Image 1 (cartoon, rainbow, N blue to C red):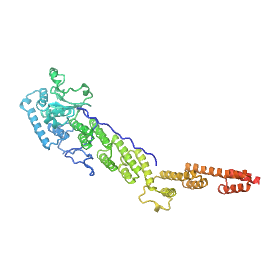
Image 2 (image 1 turned 30 degrees about the horizontal axis):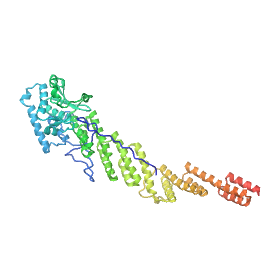
Image 3 (image 1 turned 90 degrees about the horizontal axis):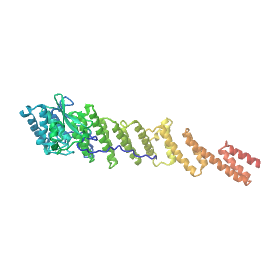
Image 4 (image 1 turned 180 degrees about the vertical axis):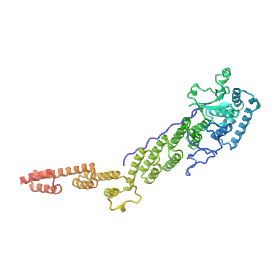
Amino acid sequence: MKNHSLKGSYFSPQFYLPCKIRTFFLFLLIFFIPLKLFAQNPSFYPGVSGQTFPQDYFSTCPEKLTADELFQLSLILSECPPESEEGKECLIIFEKIKSEVTSEEYNKMQTEEKGKAVLKLLYRDYLKKYNYAQTKINTALKEGTYNCVSSAILYMAAAKAAGLEVYGQKTTEHAFCTVYIDKKTIDVETTNPYGFNPGSKEAIENEDRIKGYYIVPKKNYVNRHQATDKVMCGLISANLASYYSNKNNFFDSIPLEALRYEIIKNEKSADSDEARKDLDTLVGNYMNLKNESNQMFMEKLNWLCDYINYWGMAPYVQKVADTHSYNYILLCYNSGDIINALDCYNKFKNMISASQISSTADLLTELELQTLTKDMQPEEKINFLYELLKNETGESENSSEIPQNYIMIPQKKLAAALENAWAGKLNALMRENSFEKGYEEAEIAISQLPQSANLKQMKNAFYNNSITIIHNNFAREYNKKNYEEARKIIEEGLKKFPADKKLNSDLKTVTQAM
């Protein structure tokens, strides 16, 4: 049996970053969505499909949502369905916010003043304490704790309700807003009440007060880009997914990250590409969890198969599929489990890479041969393999001896197995010093495998050793001047090896001496 080793896992560590737009995320799904689970352990296997929203849930524009759409989507992604009791309470609170920002007082304000007033309102009534990990909209509204993501999205929803043109801004480490006023853009740092137009006179005058709030490091504003409403909302589920994944809770994290990708996958942007990569990374981390049994391993492979069928193949997922399907088949190989090995191969053969198919097929061939010839004696094994080989070449006259569940093994592999079986038998004869018997058996082996250089080499070794033994026996008697016995030894040897030059020379020598 060859020495096969497990392939290395593609593990990508996940880090929960304070108030950051996580870069490692998970699967899409959510609360009132039907989960696609495995019956054996429904609390362990995450869903693989994303949330399906009614066609009229979002406005027709793929990038811009109304205030209500944005707020409701942010609730869903915060694990707070709008139809839940807490969701209904949050909707009532948002109605109160909408009522104030659309009041006569606000309508009289200049646009810039209104944008500033919306931020002040949120801090006056709702936002109380910064918490880098608190990304949920419902928690921000009801408990007052917030981070850059939850405060930015809450401001976006309120500003939209006030009639402002507001957009989300995203960096690798941070999220904030921008308001467009008279063709002018004004940044809004939503992590403090004086964040409207940072650097303005008011911000400078309130510098001491600002210090009482979270101060965003300048480096967190590097590589900013404007993000769509859905991308901004998706940061909520991305952060939650990262939090859960750090606890190895993929049942919650994968559906959340999957939902993030679900809502932005059609944007065909760098953000949607990032979401898919983050989702795939989580899939790899989930697959890397320790398997309590081979059955659990197979069930997770079934889950991976469903994931690929739903979302399609991607480069990282290809590595995951290649690695884990091969490792499972290798476990089957080591335990002689051909049935489950073939089941796995048949499920993944259209999903794994061409190079992986080749190495997996080799492993399956070895396992098939190992299973078919288990407990066979050397002679029986040779005869069986030779019959299989003749069956492959159409020369077999005893096809009835081929097992009904036999899977066709490539002729080259069968020839190699047969050669190996013969080598085992011939080596045993060599160790026993049965050189003449070994020579006879080697001739049979070469008749079955005429192209085998190894068998020809072994035949020559048997031949040379046989001749050496005959010659040495002859020489012993000849040196004793027992010419009759010496001649008899040579003549017996020539019956088996009539063309050998050394034996014919010995015969000539002894004949002259007599």
